Length: 417
Ligand SMILES: [Zn+2]
Image (cartoon, rainbow, N blue to C red; front, side):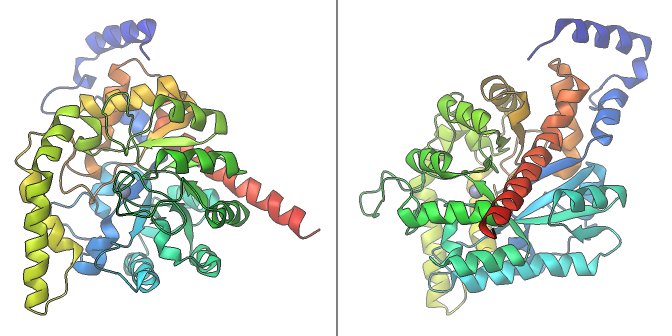
């Protein structure tokens, strides 16, 4: 997406006002910052609720040694306007009580908002996000990551909507009883369904009716195509990158990217190095067996000692292994944004960081939400216009969310006749 006249203009203007050009000490120019700060920046995936619940982490923390990606200060410095907090129920350690853990995570987000009413508010709609922006508060939204949370019960799905959940990822890395996942699609021990079951299609239609965004990140390819054929509203990929650049089954093929473009939806690019950098993916794959064994041993030891297994413990180990692999430059993330913009279209790409869910494996320079302006700088460097950058930063997601709300109203209107 290079645009030579714009690049030339930038070069000229940076000569004229040298202090506004990015330097190593100040990697974001005044122009990039102005564009970034004029946008409603929306990120569609952060796993911070695990920290709220397991660590008792307070989003108001100003601890300079905290290695987390999200805090109110970091969000403010990065002009993050809206965050979709991920309600992710680890299926192994929560077997038998998925709904209970889902409710606990939802509660943890509300509790943070209640603790910081002057800086953060719960948000359930596009209008709420815009209101929070005007009030200079972080809009806190919620998305459920993994259809297993509804325990095969559409009543629970509706309850989650009523509690404010505004997207649901049809599956996480585990195939559930109605949707195949890319995470275990090659595992012969797992019972698969060839995509979505009839109940799975009903779930998608119920989400359309409710106004809950259908999220196709994580799903198996056939599940994706079934969801696209079933949905009456645009879909989102809340945190997915491109398979043409990194051959991970969790990434989206160009055909899938084009289909989301045609569907009017949006692909929110994941910041995880494993999905954005082939060398990182290969290195992670090479250590996967040893890492899994180390994690299993830790879980077994905990069980033997009668202690509960928490995600924070898994994450701690994960970080040790992840730190052995070199972090790629920011360029790899920008390459994915650029690729999705080219294949799906500039109206169908956004940001789905996976902050606090990737054990620190984000590109160099992206250490928290405070670094989001560097992405704007990098897009500007590639010749993207201010208008297009604002679409990527949040405009596209807000359009899709608004369209999902409109389709819901339409479906509810026609069903009450
Ligand atoms: Zn995920």
